[in-house]
Length: 322
Image (cartoon, rainbow, N blue to C red; front, side, top):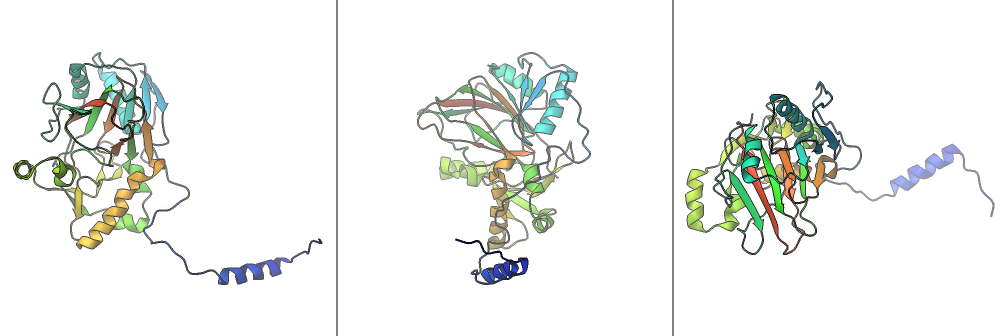
């Protein structure tokens, strides 16, 4: 078989002819996209410095770092607390292996960042400030396998949380976190323009109504009325813009028709699902995760069947988003 040489002009004409035969096809303008992501771990102008009091082992591009060389049962010096806070701001979630903290030590560590919260909606641990997630036959039913930010149904959602796994299933049971600053950065410009000054309503009912009867819900809703927060909040310490809506608690964007609000929220919720914005942590008993609830969403992967999984969480009171 001989090879026929095709001139550049002939090739161009063939391509044009072939393209003209393609059927019309498009995806929605607000559909998901592929290709390069903008992955900024820290805000523009942020001055990074070396860590001197512990080792930082990154776990993903923009979010998640393991901290080595610290015993969290010991009191923190001012210098150590400052350096850990800087690591939290830069990495959004910090992991500490094999700490095996008592409940009191877990609370003491969390108090370095402020007053502790209580949560009337979840099972209590050995004190009012400790929430216990017991995924076993005798545990209180709840679901965390949905992307969410904790307690955004409050006027002042939690600043952060310290979670420890007491019992780990033989397989599965990982937790994932998503960087909501990266989620915001990668929205189309026209979407960011629509939401930069928007306000959304948050309510505890969508996340919790399946667990309680009408009487209990009626009592709770008197104490927990809907609240509003900006769709895009600024981090109070870094100034960075972050997407601040979540599937569990955000019910509508004010000023929009319901159908338009629902469509826009679906697009915004989907940003947490992008793997490039995520870190996934495989637990061992006694591990600690400390996350910035202002800057992240998280998802507890329920892939361990009927195995036992027990976790305890202490949450730190936060400020009003702006």
